[in-house]
Length: 68
Image (cartoon, rainbow, N blue to C red; front, top):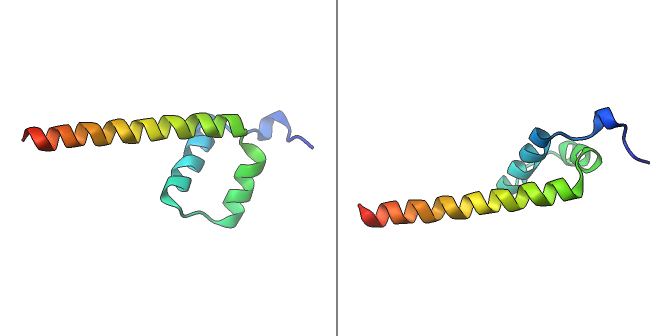
């Protein structure tokens, strides 16, 4: 059964869920809430953007350290 539209996850909720996943710490109740409220496609999209930002950030950091 689908959740009502008002209970659907927002972009901010998806970003928080991805951040918790990257850290690897999360309460089971929070995880179960995310399963109900967040769309898998939104989760994949935000996850890919987060990975891209981390990789670009590391590249910029390494170039900065090497240049100094």
